Image 1: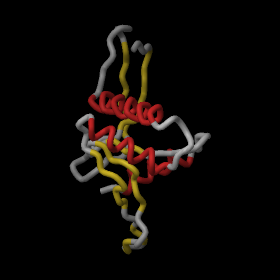
Image 2: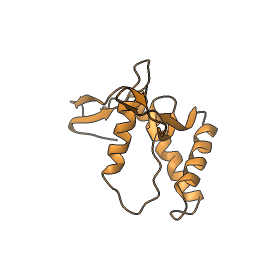
Image 3: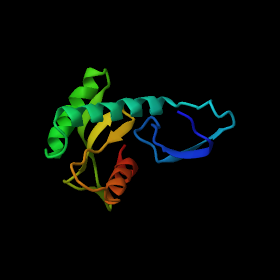
Length: 138
C-alpha cells in the first residue's frame, strides 16, 4: 500500500498498567514505495479481516451485537490471539467505585479495544465511548 506525504494516526499502546492515553505517531514517507509498519498495524489488520469474515459468515447485518462479539472472539482465538470479553472498566466517582462499571466488548492481546456495533449508521458517540474506556482502563 502506498502512502504519500505525512500521515498522522492515533496509537493506543500499553504502559504496563493497562492501556495508555492516545498518542500520535507521525510517519513521513520520503520514499514513495517505503511504508513503516507498526506491530499494532499488523494486529489491527488481522482483527479487521476476522471481523469481515464473521460478517460474511453470519450473513451480514441483522443480528444482535452479542452474536457478532461472540463470533469475533472465537475467530480471533482461532488465529492465536488472546481475547478478553466484557472487560470491566470501573467508574470512580468522588473516590467511590460505582457498582455499574463500563464494559469493553473485546480486548485483544491486551492492547486493542474492539467495540462491536450492530447499527446501520455511524454515530460519533461510538468513538467517545471507546476513548472513555481508554481513559478509565487500568
